[in-house]
Image: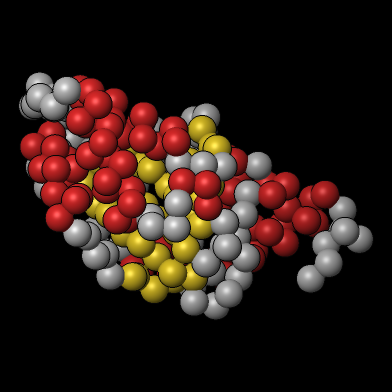
Length: 197
């Protein structure tokens, strides 16, 4: 649909409505042995305290932040009902969750490498952080990315969220969401991490 003849407010409502209509299906995660070191670190630092999903958009609705801006886009996407149907660990909302904290967004995964490496280097509430040297830790993250997101660093919009937006989170300092949206608008990847003290 050509939205150029709509007012700004009408365009916002149109894009919000489109995102709410997106239907997902879960894609099977397949990892090779090169991701073993990454998962060892993740399991050591956040044992059983993470969720990882790859979701395919099955009704071909294009999703992008566009004129919505990062905060509104993430609000609409993470309130999508089909997303909850495909991630059973999440608690369905009674009311729409409105994000209030700043959300960092960028059109590549380079910052994801730094964010997840930093998180693993410091560890969770009851761990002391990775014992790997920094370059080996970064290499383990890169190996994981090559398995998890094989189409490359530059083909995803990446959002880093520190808000405890669902009941699954412990509502403490270790609540993180890593959201990666494929630029062909047909795939959403989520990694959620939490811990409790």
